[in-house]
Length: 108
Image (cartoon, rainbow, N blue to C red; front, side):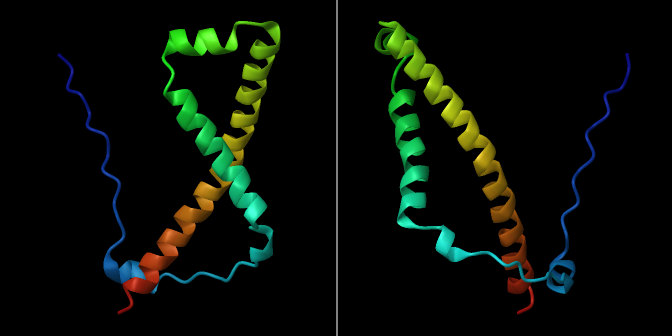
């Protein structure tokens, strides 16, 4: 029998290492994050919440009853895939900001 290798543990930075990290300011335009932006992001979350409440039979009944509904379903799929890609960028930014917050918090 061959011995299974355990995955290497990811080493976390120590509080002192976090406190010592430096980072530059980033020019972000807060005016881009308007009520319309909030509404667009929330719209996908609301649609996803509704669709998650359908089992496969209900979703099939609702969307495959006509060709127009099937096209609507595929349009929703395409729009949600674009939203996922868009949100990946924001996830990266949020992760970076969380790291910055930890760096500053560990300076106290």
